[in-house]
Amino acid sequence: MSLLFKERSQGAEKISVSMLQKVIMFFVDHVRQALGSLGELWRTPAASIMTIGVLGLSITLPTTLYVLVKNTEQVSSGWEQAAEISLFLRKDVASADVQQLVKRVGLWPEVESLVHIPADKALDEFKQLSGFGDALQYLDRNPLPDVVLVIPTPKHAGPTAAEKLLTKLRKEREVETGKLDIEWLSRLHGLLNLARELVLLIALLLFLAVVLIIGNTIRLNILNKRSEILVMKLVGATDAFIQRPFLYTGFWYGLLGGIIAWFAVMILLWWMEGSIAALTALYQKEFVLSGLGMEELMTMLGLSVVLGLAGSMISVHRHVKEIEPS
Amino acid sequence: MIKFEQVSKTYPGGQQALRQVNFHIPPGEMAFLTGHSGAGKSTLLKLISIMERPTVGRVMINGHDLMQIKSRQIPYIRRDIGMIFQSHQLLMDKSVFDNVALPLIIEGYSRREITRRVHAALDMVGLLDKVKNFPPTLSGGEQQRVGIARAVVNKPPLLLADEPTGNLDPKLSMEIIQLFENFNQAGVSVLIATHDLGLIARMRYRTLTLKNGQMITDGLVEDWHEEDHELTV
Image 1: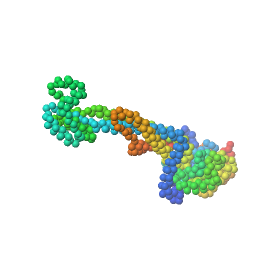
Image 2: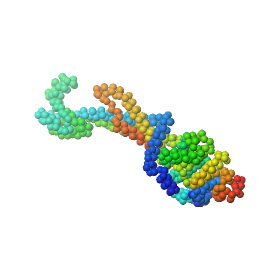
Image 3: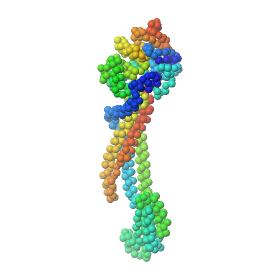
Image 4: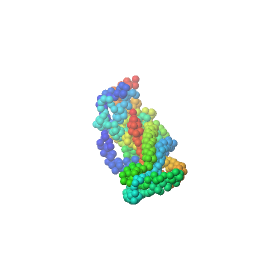
């Protein structure tokens, strides 16, 4: 393309560089520049490893926290399913009506199963467990009501759904009152929400730091190549052509940093697995720490590449323009 | 080919580098631009390659007003102008081949075409045997010829040279000028800025003389022999 000499542009494009060839050369150029940038990183290993390391570790921290929060959520979702509702029945309800209630409620789609604890049995249990055994002998009638334990289906075991079910159950004629022991679950949910938000905030701050670090590294690269950029501008290189190798450098920083983060997360999780196993053993629970899934790994690598590219883009746009032959 | 119409250039700070310069170099002409250092030679060349913009007046290449060229089009203008510098402006960590190939790589030529053209350009300047060398291993004259090969490798219709013989002895200088003559005979317009009056005196080419930013003579060497004395005083 020649702006000043019409005949020349036609001549050059017709004879030497056909359109198809230009398209092919465009991709060949890209591959060449991408490999060139990778080679450049290889030639300065110390500086490259430091930058890649900073990037990798900055991504490792939020990723590890994310994995921990994810696992906690998985465990606590197991606890949620154990949520049960205790219904205390009115004292004046006949035992036939109680059987009716158990049958009726047992058919509700929200209910997984029911356990009926008659008042006498409850008193016996209380006698055994409370240690008031003898004192209770002096009561002239059983003060305890019949109790029905309702275990909701997993779908209705969450705090809000269970709350709804409780309100519905309270409306039953035979039910005096009901209790959902779910406050601690709401608290746990609150804490988990907080943790998730913290992970997000830490991630955002670290990502910003990564963008700045890469931006600065690329800026130094550009300044180091000042004379080369000047010569390229003198012989007619466009800004886009000059910027491309630096953008590829940012891309490689991102990709390699992401791979480092991946390894670091694996090592950290392997390291923590022992202490987590010891902790869960105390609760007599089988627990397997789940690491990064394929999708999450790809997201992490993609994010890392985007951060590397973003950092270099910011830097390149500012600094390549600044270098002008004079 | 190159036309200046009432061109003045004032740098920020008030230094006036060019005052109302007018001249026209027709296509296929070879001309010298001379004057003391600081007379405005470099500024004039920079206005042609759009490293600077004129404060007043119009600079035209091939009938196109350079004022109309946007900054993002400048790279394409520079591909039409072969530029040669006193300081060579070579990349010292790249081989002679890579240095000369640079303009072709930028324009997206195929590898085969690049090799063919680089070898042709290096053959023209007589450095085909140094294709794999690195610039620091070459002499000053050889480095300058690498610079010339790079300037002509994509066959621009216009060559600008800023003190191309600056650091060379008279014999080498003559060889460089003869290279320019060869390109000129092939139809390329050539403008050479130099303060080497001895060199100009031996050639019979149009010579533009600048003094304090003004064009004081414009013509063949014989026409201004008296001014020559005035200049060297």
